[in-house]
Amino acid sequence: MTGAGHINPNKAADPGLVYDLGVTDYACYICATLGDHAWIGDARAQLEPGLQEPGHASAAELPDHRGATPADRRRSRTVTNVGPATSAYTVKVRTPTSLVVRVLPTTLVFSMAGEKKTFSVSGGDQQEVVEGSLRWVSDKHVVRSPVVAVVGLGAPHL
Image 1 (cartoon, rainbow, N blue to C red):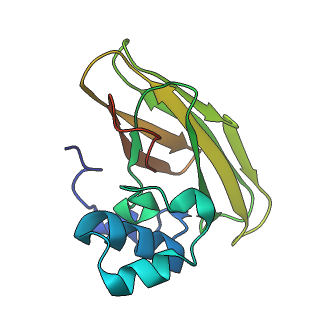
Image 2: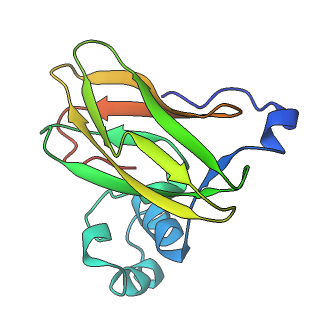
Image 3: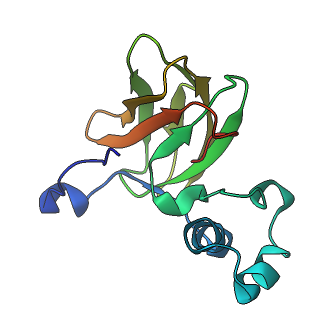
């Protein structure tokens, strides 16, 4: 399994973008991690239909992007601008040549602090496990997230 790397305290104090997480994200993560215990199952029944898939660990795996074939599967993520009011981030994806990852849109343009933008990630590969990274790059910040694609797991987990 891959991670985002070691934490740099100076950069952590000014991250530029943060991934949004909500109660639903944490509930899905708990269901995927601990199993469908009765109290979790009751909560799961009230979640969004797309997040009720077995094994959906959702965004609470934090900003890693887990994918699986087929390549037409897609997941969305939302980020909040906590950096300069006016900023633009361009996506850079690093993966082995066997893995094609598509991110839309390829640029996130913010006009104010606290503004939210949503992007989608899709892709697949022909190997068993492939790792890479997705980076949102601005003039001041680099927001890096790991990408892991695993054949046969179903829809990508973000």
